[in-house]
Amino acid sequence: MTTPTITRRLLLSATAALPLLALLSASVRAHDYTLGELAIGHPWTRATNGRVGGGFLTIHNTGSQPDAILRAHSPAARVMELHTMTMTDGVMRMRPVPRIELPPGATVTLRPGGLHLMLIDLAAPLRQGGTVPVTLDFARAGSITVELRIEAAGARGPAGGAANPAPGSAPSSGGGMRHGH
Ligand SMILES: [Cu+2]
Image (tube, helix red, strand yellow):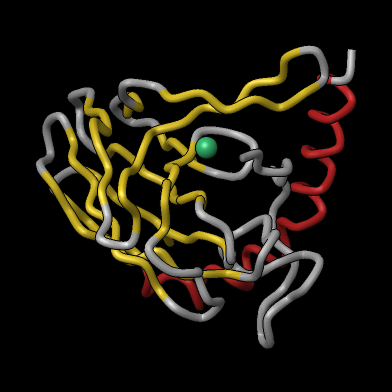
């Protein structure tokens, strides 16, 4: 049973990063979006020369009605999918889900190792420091185009990579499982 061990490790790294996240929050605050009752926080992705990439962000449903992400699309990728990641026999596996539920009052975090957006057949490599436009279609709130910030390859959070921090950034919260594909 490797799941409890990994969960514990992720929790520990997240706890250790909390003071840093508090300091960072001021610098990432500008990279937020609001669509109706949805507050969307710092969308990001990771640099890659490969054909696929992950999209990560937080969505707080401040309203009293459930909402959901139905679709995502981007000019940077031929197709996008909504993915979940689960542990099966000690291996992290990704699979598409038809929608990502956004319960009223809840904050849903798309992150490495968990729910995420999948950019498939990238038109060009994702270069650190750039941005990728992604349009999200919601069941209730409508649609919005956000810019994913391209963090370092292997970054575990929106502030930069733990293994290769960008200048002025710091190690970020845990949650970094290797992304398959
Ligand atoms: Cu995926």
